[in-house]
Structure formats: C-alpha cells, structure tokens
Amino acid sequence: MASKGEVLEALENVIDPEIGLNIVDVGLVYRVEADESTVEIDFTLTSPGCPLAQTIMDDMHREVEKATGITDIKTNLVWTPPWSLDFMSEEARLQLGYPI
Image (tube, rainbow, N blue to C red; front, side, top):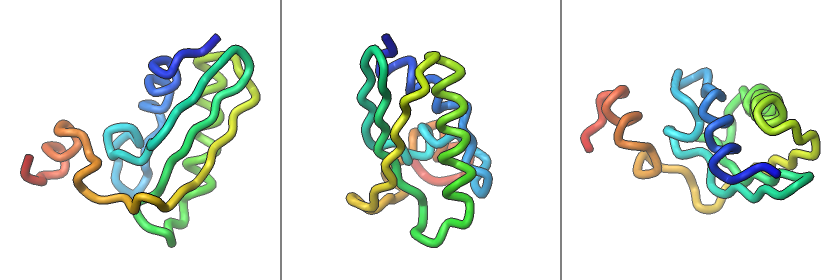
C-alpha cells in the first residue's frame, strides 16, 4: 500500500523543465489519494499552454510506479484553482528569487 507521503516524495523527483524545480515545491500537485492498488493525483500546470504537459505526466507515472510498485496511476490535469506563485514552497521561492 502506498501512502500519500510516499507518493509526494516520489513526485519530488519530477522536475518542471521550464522552471527547473520539482512539481511539489512549485505547488503543482493539488491532491494525492493512494491505496493498495491505485494512486490518483490532481495536478495543474503554471499555464494552460504549457508544451511540456505530457512530459510531466509521463515523469509522474514513472516516478510513482518506481517508488510504490503501483501501475494503476491516474493523473488528472485540473485548472481550478488556477496556479499562482502563492502555491510555491518557501524553498522554491528562495531559489527563484521571489519574496517570502
């Protein structure tokens, strides 16, 4: 059985190629549900026109499966609420030079 913490830790290995930081610290992961055989993740992108959406989804699947052994992984791209800089971790803000 996978825990939410294990899934989030795996997702920290997924880097947003345009920003260069992991998708958890950037604040793109909105919801994680995990049980014995499935993982479901709601996530967003920094902009609707992001050309790397499929790359990020593929990386999410690969990293979660590698960490948990679960192959039934559902990634749901959502736009509500719209992503903003406020969703970034303090560490990400510091790395990108934004005020805390």
